[in-house]
Image 1 (cartoon, rainbow, N blue to C red):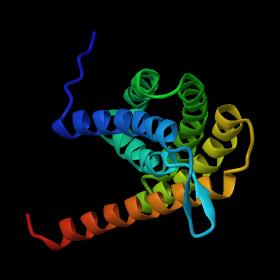
Image 2: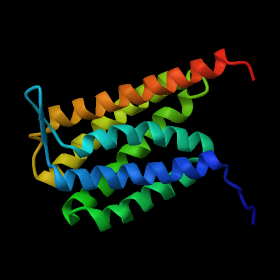
Image 3: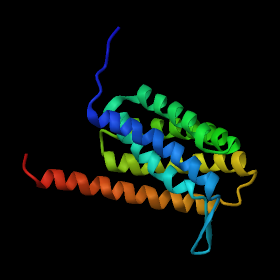
Image 4: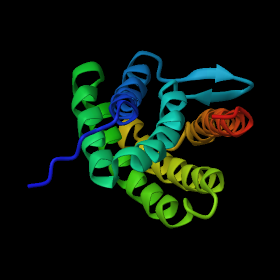
Length: 173
């Protein structure tokens, strides 16, 4: 049996990913939708959008199996902090959307990681929204707000990632 030792980055990303899943469901339970610029954005969408980028980073740091374990932990934590219908809807939506995200991100990441993150997150957030909303709320009423909320968070996360990479290249080791 091979033991894989995790780096500090892997541990932090694992915890952050599970926490974003649970945070999304906790926020969805407390604040089903926030009115912003005429859209109704489920509060959990803001955490969920971040989750896609953190998932890609976790996969790079610790592998796909570890990422799937983090989804399970996030779903279990969600059961403690969210309404059961939201936690179950989220578990199903995250499982499917993250597998789709994984399938898109993995083959593209070596060519251009930021493009891979952006494309996989876009596809993942659409799949997640189309599954989560009907399961959690019984309709697609909040679809536009869900997509916008996740997209804004994803764009911010990718921009921060790009900025960090640019800074790292600019600062000599």
